[in-house]
Length: 318
Image 1 (cartoon, rainbow, N blue to C red):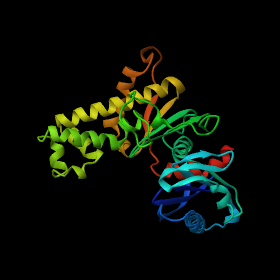
Image 2: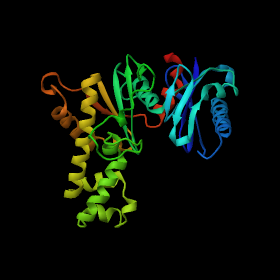
Image 3: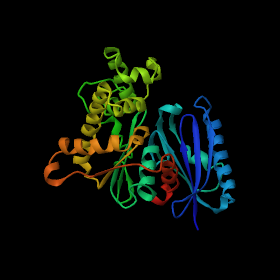
Image 4: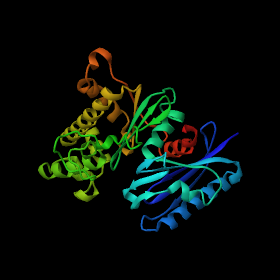
């Protein structure tokens, strides 16, 4: 049996897992970290997490084929450079090279959304498909494109930033500095922003009761909960939100024509309240849908494990 380590590196947490050749996680380890730490301190944290999770699996590093890192950043896997990671304040960092100083196994790096997409195709909701597009609807909008069970992100490896495709010309300013990005309309953050704006005009909405009239307490789940209770304001907000999601995905469908679209992120927990209306709206918004159809749409099923599994298997992609 071959064993690999996958690490999901975020701004506040490091999640690591030992994954076998059948894509099963046999041990897990989580540790909190801080973006305020120096590069060297964070590298040490990651290395310790790797050693700890290998120890939990009753293995030694000599039995590990490779270590894969997934992080929300622009990655050039050919040069081994992490080009830009906003949440960690890193620029042009040779992360794999630095990691290899801590253990004598190959280290690979990819964007975390790419890893999640790969994990879902190898071992999750899309395991019966070869070509998939994953979109994660959370604080932002991430995405990954899998072709023939391989990560695709363009000639310079900087592609598949689906959240920063343009949805509205000169629209809402995005956190990336551009205007009108898909993320500015289809993220949970965008839904919460519009909900807060709408609540002021509709004090009778159930949403006010759910958040106890504290707009700072509003989250995306409250809006879906209110809609399921028949709240007219919430129903309108959810319908508009899913319109935005469908419009953004319709462009990606026309370009890539994947077999399946995987919807992940926190909002995917709404399952049929999101997926069923989204399927109907994609038929409305996608070019030639009436004649050639649209891809299957499914909810991700692995949660955070998708990123660990995908990261672990990066080495098998090269």
